[in-house]
Image (cartoon, rainbow, N blue to C red; front, side, top):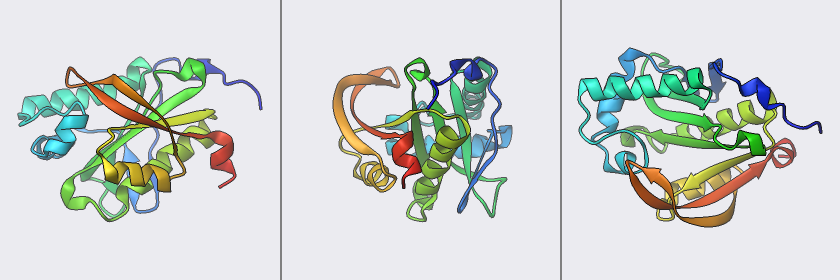
Length: 194
């Protein structure tokens, strides 16, 4: 396999629309402020994302602007997660971050509003982003960073083919606080052999 050409990640990045089973992943739009404001009332989302508790409409629009800036600045791809049968209404988020792309690694993150969990949306989003990363972008390895007590995400990552690698104490900054995370990984060869 040829080495990864990181020049393909020079900004601005083009954010695709991804269809994956029951989900559609698309760029955030201003109307997604309702999603952000609802997510801001869910402590488990606020605890592990950059959504701030009790976000105002201005906070929600600032969150959306930050998501759009990721691609513009070349930091990654942030998607509004929608049910495929209702693409105008976001129910979560999924992202592919390129912080370590020069090392041949990227990371995936995802969250879904509580009332939409249990329908396979997060799994479909994880698979859609992984397929985009491995098959379209030829990224050699993907990580998912999960807080040790997040059993649902641990289960989801394992079902998606990611395996535990290590615990990173205080390595992630979430809402300005260091948190412990476990790193789960899947490489391109493992994805292609599934």
